[in-house]
Amino acid sequence: MKQDDQEKTLLGMLLLFFVVYTACAVLLQIRSDELPSKSAAAVDMFTGGLFWVMSIIGILMAAIRSKTIMKALIWLGVSAGCGALAIDEIFEFHEATRYVVGDDDYIKIATLPIALIGLYILYRIEKPAQRVIAFFLVGLGFHALYIVSDMGDGDFFQLPFPEITLLWAEEMLELLSLQSYLTGFLLHYTIVSRSSNSHVEPMDDDSGVKTA
Image 1 (tube, one colour):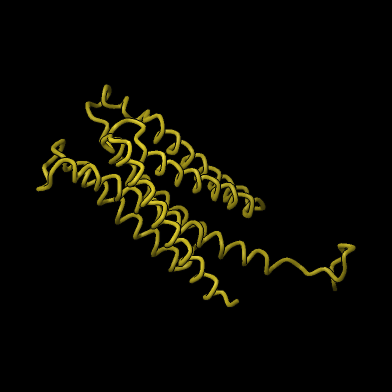
Image 2 (cartoon, one colour; image 1 turned 90 degrees about the vertical axis):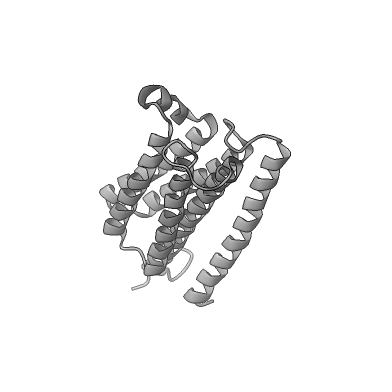
């Protein structure tokens, strides 16, 4: 199968997976008879799940980049950051910041410039393909809308929508943002792993002796 065909197949399967994943998150949240803003809500478990997957991809990328210590450490940092965010989605430690700065929205707002800086660093060290960058930019777009919907519930300004609509919009935009980031990560990992494998010298037999 050609490279373009493989990537199209991957993206098609990911789209189907995310549709089912999001539908399950919504249905489970509705079934719980709780607002999606409730601590440790059902939809938060699905959000945390996406962070865990990105954390694993960070480990896989660190393994591929193990010959370059700096790159490996950066990818391990990505893995650790995503893992920390996954844990926070479950236990919501960021809620405690409201007692320090008056509102837990500030920590959410900070995630946008942090994501932007992180993606810029990855761009500089990895030089990802344009199609990978496109998914990262889409993720940043959804990320920004997620922040706006969170701020627009009256804490900073008021958007012209009912509170329940803004609550659901916030959660769905966060899911869409993470799904876009995750797609970029998976696509980049696929491209890099394929490139790494193509540079492995072939063996002439089962003895492990490299061909000349």
